[in-house]
Image (cartoon, rainbow over all chains, first blue to last red; front, side):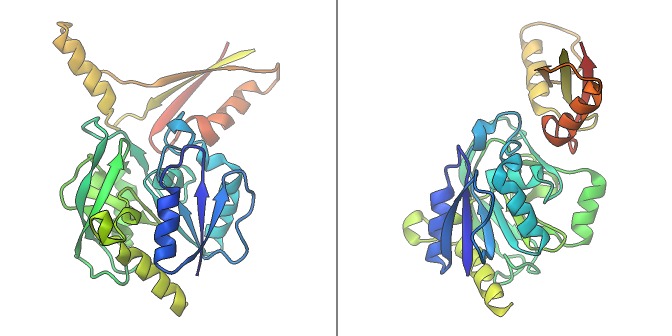
Length: 222
Length: 77
């Protein structure tokens, strides 16, 4: 299984994400934002956390227009997997690969702590090995994680079972406690919490493993 | 020629920064501020062109505004 991790200027979780993919059994290639193509045979693209382009204009807005973005769009359009974490989630909404937008936290503060997430659906390649309703401990670290979507968009997400994770206690004002959402074909996931930061016990937890394990087992079957 | 783009959060989208500014104004003793909405102004210096307004609107749709949550106004100066 081949993963490509994109680095934008200002990404700072790209190495963590690449390491997490490697530890979980993926072959990883690092990709620069100015590259115009993904490596041949890429199964999953990882868009990491950080502050791409200094969060200028809006978080993720400029990264979403970078040369590699067109290749990521094409990868998603042909049914490839994409995982966007934190700033990567913001980039995916700016690319319109996921609905909604991420606004400033309701409390206006940068939040950096471990939170409890509920796994809201098992029907996704990212969560099929985690029981629905399971509670997992995953760190958050963001200033703009307040997921915002209009009533119509929220209803579509709910009707199509596309909410992947919710916060047990809403830290940032996100609509319907949403921490992560899926695309219509369920192969693109964006989430604010950082599963790549809880892979090995030395990191203080291993609850992030389930997501990567789901992905690799699902892809082995496909 | 110059163009000015004003980007604001759409009506109905909670502006938490604007609310913080409103609270601060109240703390400073300015009474009667019922609401504050914070946006941004982007000034563009453009080559002379016939379809400037259309072009700037396209820039807004593609990059300058996130139309999921923001509205924009274009002025050609």
